[in-house]
Length: 446
Ligand code: TRP
Image 1 (tube, rainbow, N blue to C red):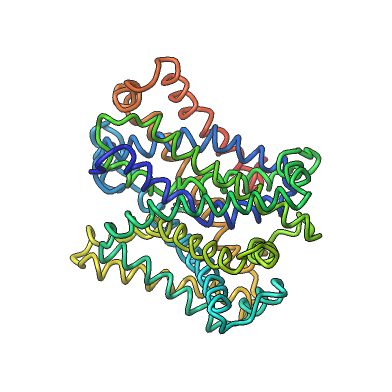
Image 2 (spheres, rainbow, N blue to C red):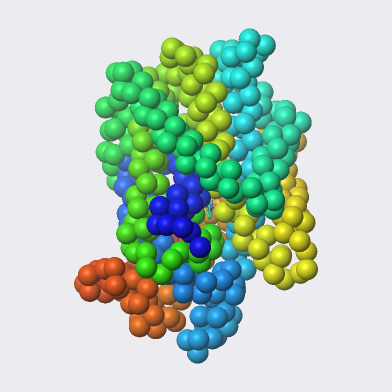
């Protein structure tokens, strides 16, 4: 049981805030032309993310078990079909796929932290041409594979060997530092003279650019950044004490996550514009090629750079734990493996699948799956299809399968009556309809 509301908020925010906010949000915003995309994304957070956040927490707290078992229990108790538990299976697979490339990108941040560290202690060259440094990394299979493995082992250390205690304490100290660093970068961005251009890029919508694909991407990002759709937050909800308000707590997590993404965007885009990089150029290398430009000009830039990429890796670490936990917990329940062995198996398989993402940039740079590089294809299927399908099923389960007596008990006491009714009908109708329309777009039905 979490000792307090704050402990749950810290864990859930640790899961939510990660590469999704500081790496993925800026780069896909860039690829999607800014303003209109950001507003659609914010609408997805409010109309899809938040209701599903409440739904996941309440299912977890009501079931008090791992997702598959909670869902099975609650369906039986509601006289519904037990196959709703398959949501948990889908979540395990999606989490595993996301973990595979997440660890590769977290490895990039470790590599950058190490580059700055070497420069700081005077044994490494400075990053004078960030584009070249990034290309060199992508071409270096050994380096990529090493850091990917290193990060995976860091995650196993927590999930399998249960060193949460130390991590929890470290993280509650380090995450505020990350925020401070982002605010320093924001201050730097404001001084570039291009802050208002960045604000314009991020918030001034150009509706002519909007197409179906943009909705799919924005919806996927809403799920990804809030850690929703694969029962990660549900798992955390199982440990939430009964007297704590789900609406307030869920809203705090979603609010904190959105805040970090927006600050990251406001910090990064002035740097991009000030350095004459096309803000629409995007790509997964965006922060790795733009941030070093700023660190190269700032006083103590080498030190900031080292700290920034290190803390980004820590933020990724607290997120990858929640990606790995469901599959590990399931293996422990379903077999008689120890937790350590189960975690090592999940990590080993995740590492192997992650090699497809490593090779996307070098050995397999010609390979295309559904018109995308292997890494983009894995990201696309997991984030843009599996998470929304998981979220759709979670919303339908919470809205229609669970009796409104149960949901009212879990949510209603902490919400005015009208707000509960609003949640119930949004979860029953609006959220599923929005997801269906967007997914229908992918399948070419609309
Ligand atoms: N939300 C995390 C991020 O933004 C990534 C993450 C952790 C995640 N757990 C998840 C994404 C579960 C989807 C589902 O970096």
